Amino acid sequence: MNTLRIQVVSPNKKTLAHVAQLLQAQHGTSVAEQALDDTGNFDRQNPPDVLIVDGTGAGDRPLEVLERLGQRHPHMSFILLCDRNSPDFLLRAMRAGVREVLPATVSQEELDAALERIRFKMGFSKAHKGKVMAFVSCKGGSGATLLATNLAYALAQDGSKVALFDLNLQFGDAMLFLSDQKPPVSLSDVARDIGRLDAAFLASSMLSIDGNLSALASPDDPANATEVKPEHIDALLQLAREHYDFVVLDVGRGLDARAVKALDHADVIYPVLQTTMPYVRDGKRLLEAFTALGYTGAKVQLVLNRHQKGGEIALGDLERALGSKIARIVPNHYEATAASVNQGIPIVKLARNSPVSKALKEWSQSMTRKPEQADEGWLARMFRRPQKA
Image 1 (tube, one colour):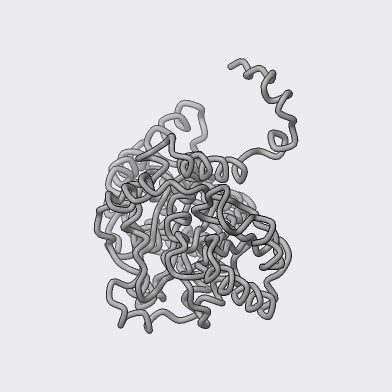
Image 2 (image 1 turned 135 degrees about the horizontal axis):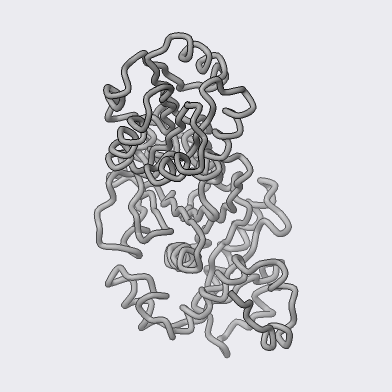
């Protein structure tokens, strides 16, 4: 899943053999002995992530060919092998969309370094490790889906690359909180074709909410939920963590093997409850189950939703009954949340001045704020002057 699909094209058997030997550890590599003008006959279902083209002795022709290919395949990266390295040629190569120009007799170190730069740019780098957050309802109607979807939206608005997975496999409706668009496929479709799973396949399976937020829908038919196995959840979350800054999971209420697999991956679990006795009772049971599963300490952070000051159950009494502190409080604002749900528009977009929107924005900013900003006092932040350009 972390391996790039690479195709090598050259009219020279010796060059093909040399590059193929350098790439022997790369699964999914193919080589083709063909003329430069024949380059581009790819499998439409699985085009390569990286195309390595031997342009030795071909002048500027490779740049013309690769520029056309780049227009047809904007997500493909090109490596050109040739012995021309003048500043003028390299500038024209960059304008043609060629990411790397390497010597015709490329070394292992040069090729590995170029591929690692491409991996990093495409999000394949193992150095990237996003944060996984799971929202769980202590009881039906807690508002966990609204919080999960809107926090994901707020994080994306703050500039983070965010993936939202609806893991409420039988009755998930997270997409309705964000958009009126029909998802291209669902989680069960991805599970059915799990052998194709890579970054490109995952991205094409998700509904794009905006430039930074993509969402994978739950199965549209509850009967299809059985096609999703724990190992599918495992593979999806391993891949998503490597490609997104935040992965937000709407897990629902059940604690079956698939939910537990998702919770195992979570850096933070947010059980969502309200201040009524049924929530207190079910919340306590859920916390006990989490303890039995080994989810303790900072991994479990209680979220109190639809909170109203002066209610019958005081915050201190709630915490004592649960045996745990409340980590986040989201105030009640029924009119704005109802309008958001009914219109399928995130509340932080529909009602920016709602106390719910403000709480979610503060939540998001606390997660995306740089460490030095988080450590500063309010007085330092107030008087900090903007950097000059």
